[in-house]
Image: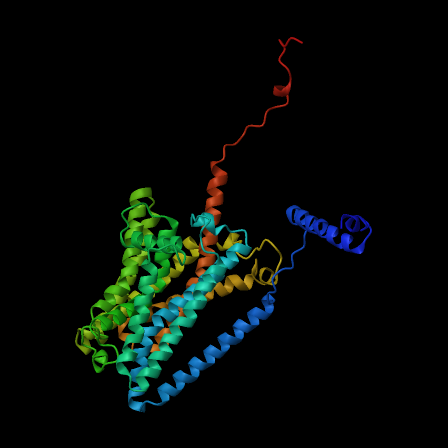
Length: 453
């Protein structure tokens, strides 16, 4: 037997196959350790294909919502259709406008990221702040959830499921509130905490006012109508008036004649007014008092309009309506003057001067038509702005919605120049605070006469 084994030559094919296997395994193990072994990547769809697929799903969802909503509205009788749409519009239009503002804020951040304006330093943000892509992701989910809830409300109400229909806006508002105060570290906890802390500082300006504080407060003044509709919606949910005939009673606790409407409308302006007083206490600058005066001019516009429902018609026509028109003109012109002379610096704007050349930068940076457009549109929209602050003009909800939408677009372009102006101020302060180093004279560079070599 041993002789037979010894007879097997080293060159035998069997021995070569057996002895070569450990060598192959050793080579593979060495390649894996050294990182030279090429591992085939996981098969993933291309980003363009994935984006097209998402867009297709979004279009299918949008068309389905429109079709279901249209069929649901057409099922109702013509005399109840307008009242039904007005109620549905009241519950869902505030969140739709908030969604649009989130989209626009993402565009603002994208432009800031492309330009030389460092918005992170202007707002004093840390590294965990939301980028424009994350803002757009939040806006996408809001765009899906809010119209879906509205479609469900229209469908259920038109098919006789009134109790289920009434639960749709309640569930939506409750979900939004819980999402904002959710204490666990999911869904951008630090950003939600930053927003809630800023809102708290706006309501109680007991500390030094930062740029973020009055910046968010200024945005809330443009969303005063949104806040008022949120209050009316929450009031009807609390008093169980959703999808009932009690909601359109003007003199009810949540009706269109409620005193809470002008109180909520004036709240952002009062917060901004007290912020200016706090800034004057901290800095002593008299310009903050003139800024406070600007916000105080909105108070007569709001309360004179609300008086229509609480005075006789002839007194409203002969006394209070002319005063309302006068206060509206004063507020609009004063606000426009302050935008151009204080909040903006159109002479040295660098907001559209992108780091890398692009078509947008070529079209918008240092163009005269941009300056004319900003001035003209800001003046016109400032004048129409008082329409949404007037409670007695709420009967045409489509017009009010359009004007509120235009006001948000005005605030959207206001943000560009306001942040750019603040960034220029920060750079100017930083450059002026640097010590001026004295250049030594030529004879000072020479060795002294008593120097020993």
